[in-house]
Length: 165
Image (cartoon, rainbow, N blue to C red; front, side, top):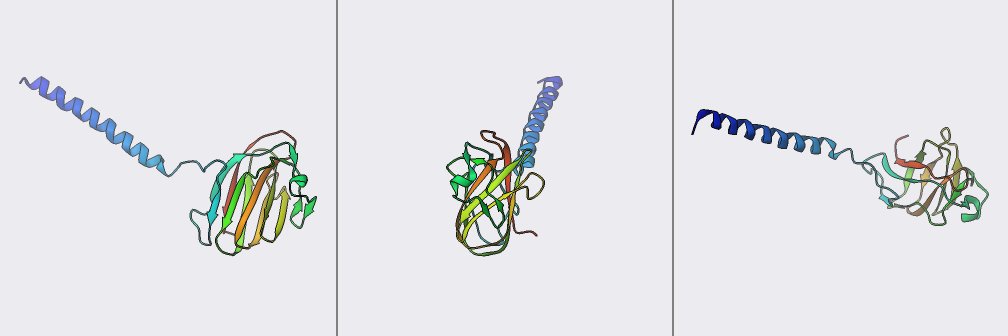
């Protein structure tokens, strides 16, 4: 076989191998950067990982938040905004948390309603236009609604759950 054909075959094999390796490296490099789930339910216990744990969704609905939970205000704030009848997330806490923070991150004005063991908590504007709830949490199941301040407006958000103070 002529030398040129052998060299060309080696070069082609090298190029194919390089492309294959590059695609594997790219896949591995981005494997840890998968976005948080959308409208996911969460089940955690103390010392959970990753911290913060994140889930995403779209805020808003057509029902006033205070009608959904039959409260106008709680110790953490007014039950404002508009939500869907069904909660956006369910949070299952396997054990008591001495400290846990739930905070919504959205480019627009959102509200937060949480109902579970021990009561109902609402918040608006914890950090700028983003709501949040901080404190001691009992074990059990919590229903979480992320609302928009105005009726029938829907905005993307990330709900961050952390034990860090």
